[in-house]
Amino acid sequence: MVTRTTAGPPTCHDAGVTSVLLVDDHASARRSIRALLEAAGYEVVGEAADGRSAIQQARELLPDVVVLDIQLPDIDGFEVAARLAENGHRPRIVLTSSRTAEDYGELIDDAPAEGFLAKDELTGEALEELLTS
Image (cartoon, rainbow, N blue to C red; front, side, top):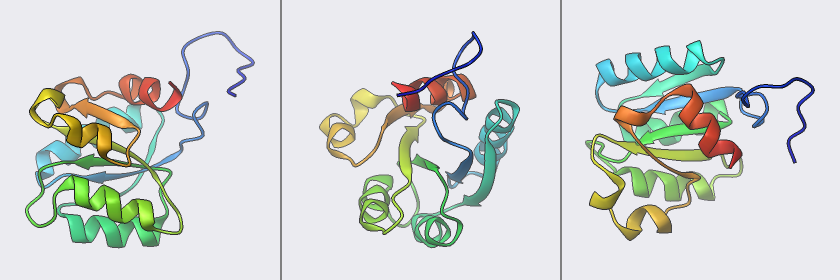
């Protein structure tokens, strides 16, 4: 249960999230997402451009949350999420894509993730809402 002492929208700290690992194969997308999340108070502790690097960095950095692109050049985001879920320190995973959730159907529902945010809807506030719902 989240208890706030001040009025207003929830913040990343209300959700117990302070550190984020960004996983996207496009550097420009990582830069944009980083800027949005840092402006909302998240600490981006690492970035990865492919699935193997994401798994390695998640194990080393122990982020609270991983913002994970589904379409990666080596291992897709669903497999990365499954592997991270097996990890001793299981980060909260939020899947993202330039495609819509409908394009992936039940794959999103079956993934060990908090949920999905389309890249054009990904903001610090949207991430916070997903993590606190």
